[in-house]
Image (cartoon, rainbow, N blue to C red; front, side):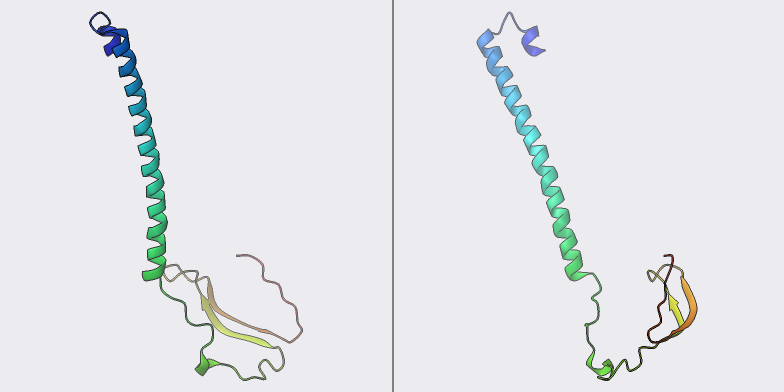
Length: 114
């Protein structure tokens, strides 16, 4: 709009140079916005890794020597559960309340649902 408004006072060469600079400046800003968005995504990944490394509660070790079962375990393949109480996360309500069951060795069972 500036070049059209000043077409009688500015030479066509200067108008061309101004338009070229405006286009290159617009491309530079576009590139800068794209780089900033990519940088923000990369920093989100770094933030997630730092959270996993520092703040996330660690799981217990795979084997706890003082709670290791005997070498002959399981002797008969029987599974017995008494009064099991479970929930998906600590802040959620219970999903199993007092579940008791026995599965004999060699018996097949199916669990249906969530």
